[in-house]
Amino acid sequence: MKAAFFKEHGGSEKILYDEYRDPTLGPADVLVRVKACALNHVDMLLLDGRFPPPEGLPHVNGCEVTGTIEALGAGVKGWERGQRVIIFPGFACGSCEYCLRGERTVCVRYGYLGAHKDGGYAELVRAPAANLLPLPAAIAFEAGAAVPLAMLTSWHALVAQAEVRPGQTVLVQAAGSGVGSAAIQIARLCGARVITTVGADDKIEFARSLGAEHVVNYRTQDFVEETKKWSGKRGVDVVVEHIGGDTFERSAYALTRLGKLVTIGSHDTHWGRLDLRHVYSKNLRILGTNLGSILELQTVLDHVVQGRLTPVVDRAFPLKDARAAVQHVLDRKNKGKVLLVNPS
Image 1 (cartoon, rainbow, N blue to C red):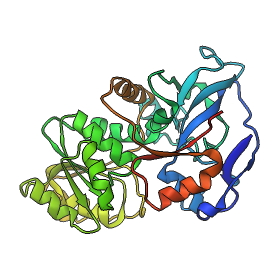
Image 2 (image 1 turned 60 degrees about the vertical axis):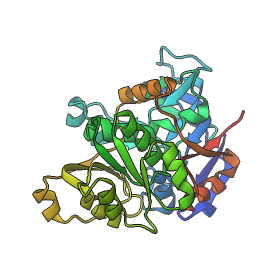
Image 3 (image 1 turned 90 degrees about the vertical axis):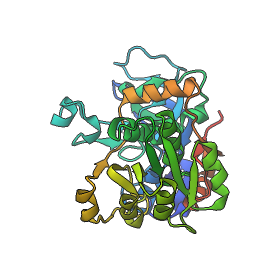
């Protein structure tokens, strides 16, 4: 098959488009012909070596995949060739103490499609049949590919972890990212008011169109001061943070008493500091989270079908142009998700 992969770490120039080994199916696996695959920041961490692929190089990135079933493992029942599907990207062992407690995202052997196993920057990808959901006819392959990691993670962070309620206030970092563009919509769906940050003025109207009440260019304004002004000096109830570093530290300053800081990534740096006086004196809660459950993914898809949530796609590149797609994300030009597509 053709795939976009890398044999050594570096920037977008390390992405190769060439023949790659075909996936081999186990009895419980399904082979999916990829129609669309979304890019994620984890792809960039894998590529530059900050998160080396556990199975080694060469490696195919791509966590968020939609497509059609090409072949079925010998033990797979209930699916048919040609069926439209979306792949839930998380893998768990199902037998450790955390899986048995129903907390599969903290499984001791947890992994992601496209990170711990070859992913969707390819014509074909292998996945366990248990990780498939039907892709509703009302959702295009391209829109569906913007859902299973970014939108699901935002849903779990705001609904399950932060338990956002009507009337609360939420600060969403980086509206132009896949996670940010999803989190704004989900917070609004929960009945919250939203303030968000962007890195360029040309993203301000984009953020407002998603439902943000106030937008701050963090390069020219202090988002903590702007948040305090917007909230009448109170601070916000919840911050969705996925940058790390100074942004993580300062996000805590933007919280009100009993506020919740939900961290779902570390795109800038894996390190972040906290002034503990703010944490204990204001009774803050620092919550870490990743992904969500396949049941939550089904819930998100239902909201998309009903028009209550909209996957945000910036632009799509043909698979052969994966190098240009990666550079587009690295240059932070995107407003929403960037995709690789296979038109065939």
